[in-house]
Amino acid sequence: MERPPAGMPVSCLPQARPLYLVADDRGVAPLLAAKFATVGIATQVVSVAPADATHLVVLSGLNRCPTPQDVEREIFGLFSQLRNCAAALRAGGGLFVTVQDTGGAFAAHHCDGQQAWLGGLAAFAKTAGREWPQLAVKAIDVAFTDPETVAASLFEELMGGGPEREVGLGENRTTPSPIAVAAPLGRSPFNDGDVLVVSGGARGVAAECVLALAACQPLRLGLLGRSVLVEESRELARLADETALRQHFIASASGKATPMEINRQVSRIMASREVRSTLANLTALGCEARYKTVDVTQTAALEAALDSLRQDWGAIHGVIHAAGVLRDKAIADMTPDQFAIVFRTKVDGLRALLRVTQPDTLKLLCCFSSIAARVGNPGQLNYNVANTTLNAVCLAEKVRRPDCVVKSIGWGAWDGGMVTPALKRHFEAQGVDLIGRQTGARAFVAEVFAGADSAVEVLLTGALGRGFASLAGHIIHRENHGEKDV
Ligand SMILES: NC(=O)c1ccc[n+]([C@@H]2O[C@H](COP(=O)([O-])OP(=O)(O)OC[C@H]3O[C@@H](n4cnc5c(N)ncnc54)[C@H](OP(=O)(O)O)[C@@H]3O)[C@@H](O)[C@H]2O)c1
Image (cartoon, rainbow, N blue to C red; front, side, top):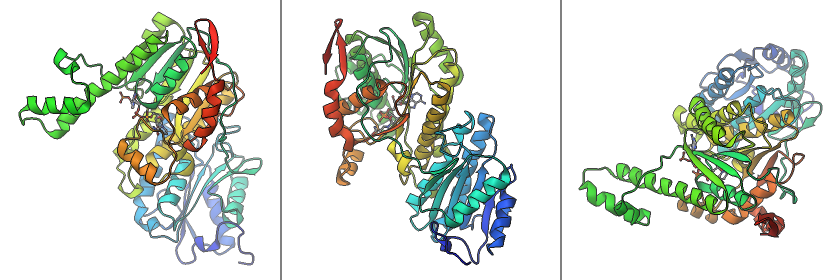
């Protein structure tokens, strides 16, 4: 080779082993193979890479995916492919590249609505690169024109591109850069009495955010979660905390219940109490609040829940999708079920929410994403893929809804919610600045009030907390027909 590539080190491209090109259905793979042949790099075009593959470029993200099933096939297919090759890739010295067609700028421009659901593909490369630092990785997004042009730009990028792990090959060569500053002061997009639906809004950090929003104006809030509201006996209601409840259930089980069953009973009651407390606090702020026990991924049940809200309150004006679960595992150890539940809660949940609110004109669409998606946190492939998908879909939705405030908030770690005390100690040991509950909630309100022209994908982290603390003084708080600062 005459000229060493300026970006991706040439040592990443195989000398002895073949470079596997996982084929697309648009004919790019054989054209790319021919280009590699001109510089003496042997390739094999395959539909699935073998388990001992150390160098692979996955082109199947270029496939047209007109249906949710097509998208699912690509995402879950790549998950099983990566796991299958995990041992070989982990050994180091190899190359893992994903190529997708989400408009050439990771859904930020000109991305067809359906293709945006493939946005999470980029998280595979980023997470693999964090988990296996000896592996060279790259996530490439192309604006598909014709197979020859795409093959040429991919060849150029792989042979001589820069060291960036995410590269968009659209009109220009770009790398994504989400906004990481506190939103400027704005105004509520809502009128008093407007109806908001919030998945995951009855508990955790989203409940804090909803309360901060409710403190600004009276809204109607439909909160969605899987937890069932438990009717407590007087005896149970007297037991104030988890420890007292656990002792009670251990004593009344007389050794017949497993620790897991006892934990489940305690969790049910604690979750139910948290939901009731959120509802009571919202009511105290002058809002109407209802809780619906529903799994946000179940479209029919979700539709029924929203229909019952619409019957009493009318059209829906805002959707906040904050439902999320964690099942952290290293890529090699992650089961398909662990991948699926985290992915589906976020992605199927958003799809279902968008489907059932089609008749509504939304003023707000806000997803709770994570900074993990941007950096590709090791041990969180499922979560990273899911949140990267939310980012991409929100970017694409913004194009369809110019007058709507669309946000995908890449939260850093909060002091609360899914950050358990053990996780909090871990973050603190690492020197991570956690987002305080009040600070995070105020920053959320600032984003909602930032206006329809404000950035879609934003990062709100603990490091910005100090900035939010001062910003919070400017958020308009309306109460008793007057306005005051909080
Ligand atoms: N806390 C953080 O540091 C942090 C950082 C970055 C991003 N986030 C994001 O913020 C959101 C809220 O997180 P959190 O920390 O508050 O977690 P959390 O305390 O575990 O709350 C998660 C919420 O999602 C609901 N939920 C989960 N699966 C659901 C489903 N299938 N259908 C309906 N509701 C469902 C839960 O209610 P049920 O259990 O009753 O269903 C709960 O209300 C998540 O999307 C998370 O990814 C949080």
